[in-house]
Image (cartoon, rainbow, N blue to C red; front, side, top):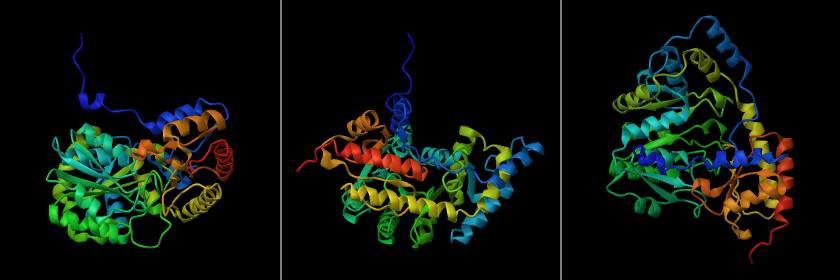
Length: 382
């Protein structure tokens, strides 16, 4: 008889997003609006650079933290927006997922607590649990998805090690206000906790105000970890490339986890990443904005309670008026109307569903038509 496996792993569930995507794909003719997968392809200059790198046999081990030219390019790009990290304080990672995994693994001792404002991407809870940490959800659904002082103060304990900020947010599209970020900064200053800034949707914000905690609160640099990715803004999801920036003593510990987990990012992709940094994504962002407006307008017309997203490419309407839990709602929606959405429970927020509007306008219009027909079969609670 075999011995038990890792208990922390056995307690994990597979991704709910992937489960409902698979269920939708198994349903003939189903419209999928489940994944955060840009409709667009990677820009041609980026792909051309990979071919050139391969032809030059750039297929050998690069330095663990990334090629110097890419680290310098990332440092320069950060400086343009007011973030000052030397190349020696940056790690090129296998996507933002690995950056988050390496950061939390380097930070957490068993029993340490990580505050996650919810609704939130499920990855944060899963990694925290794998690290034998304690996930502390901070429900912001009742405050327009912004963090409030009393709620944050109540969530902090002597075991709190970090808080994760995702702005623009997945799944809500919320962008944190300067007031929200100031509350977090004050708590971090008082307690010494780390602030992990997941900025993978930063370039897909539709507001003009500064949205980076790291830019607004440079005095907390030694407690701040910034995570970013090529996936969403440059339509490079399948490349699995991201980066992490942190004060040198913190980065020095995180790089150990990175080195032993993945060794390094692929060598022949790194010059292409430099090319990507110079790409203008404003047209892509504007198309997402128009799709946001289309989807938001239709949901409001249907009578759904929904906040207008300020970034990313997700919208998170409430379904509480229909008296169904989110898994039942989404399962019936697939089977009865041929539309795939993601239950809010997958993001720690029962009573909501997530719709991704990074798909084509034709798919969105068809999906919204199917959603409207489905809602007409339900009887709203009074």
